Length: 548
Image (cartoon, rainbow, N blue to C red):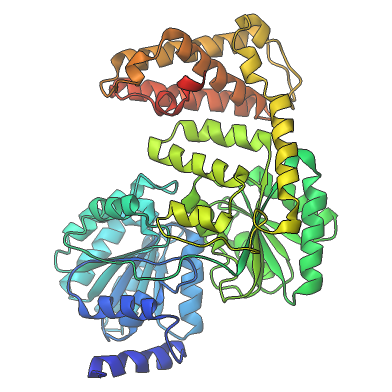
């Protein structure tokens, strides 16, 4: 039986958002929870499930109340603000580019008795400012705050690759408004991450709304190609050309780890006749807005972006998501894949895996927590397994799925995946230099080698870096207090091998010597900082000593 609140909710859904119904029962139930409960709420639904509506709809149902929405970056902010503005919903936003005058103008309007916006969007970077805290105090004193909302709340968890320490700034804001609820939303909330979100944001007695939503994406075909046994640009060009011929208003996203890679990919595809633009957080505001508009309108077909940018959320016709660089965790991969086929259309997700990418990503992830490194290892296993890929990611997230039969290259009979995988394994085994180096004299290992280096470094400099890493690892190992039984059996020779691997990967996967030195400094500083805190370095924890 429908209540008055039910009727009001559906009327607002139709009047404010022009939707005739909810996307799913799970979306409706999550929205109802936000409307009716008086405690904090954690909403964990997959990409494309419509999480934002779960707080936006309640936000428009309470006149003269403001929902404060905290988002991780300008890209996410701009998309959600644009969406609400298109719906003619009053929204204000503040980001790092808004200064004191903007806050003062807004406060003056409040003091003059002007109507308040339904939503105020801010980036997490703004939360630490005294001006924002002053604004929150004024709004709270006037009893104008309906709820706090933390979107992409997994950024508050150190178990997420997107962890941002700035999310700690939310706690004093919460403490200053003790009667205001917090709504947290995420699309990659595994059990560990969900618990960490609630702890990090002080969500006491929070209701967790995971729903029974089907996280499997059968409309997305998943495959993996190996860069080292084909020309990846030829392959990608052919793929995009096929999509353009088969799909009206086709567009796609290419994920890269570094801004330099987005530029390289965009330039090469554009040279081949496929309009492609580089898109990263380092673009200035006007250029970023123009680039995105060109993509949304179809002037640009492919957008080469760095991992983590909130693009493609509301765009129809995203037919493929390409990982030019290896995704670093399964959570990151699943969220990226969710950019495609958001409205139920057929789409493709492809990873291009190369040995150099593998080494580079492994070097980066070895310095992360054991939880993150384990997730990275799952990505590698996902790429080289001969099992259904939909079953593999389903298993990682803790739910069951039947083999897809035809929705991934491992299941499709005509995909030739098995032959490609075998060729890649042969290539990898032939070119894995590190095992051959383990027993060589140190000066033999560090002879200058022509591995994509613009400038060859002297042997004694690389030997010096190796020895500094050995000293740092030994010092960390001696001072660490959290040794377990396995770690305590590590010998000096093992640490030397680890140092050789760290230095070698830093050298062989960086094009410029400045990048090589930066990689060495980052690793050394991380190990040194852990030694000071008497914590065993993640490099030691994640290194596979037993396989040596």
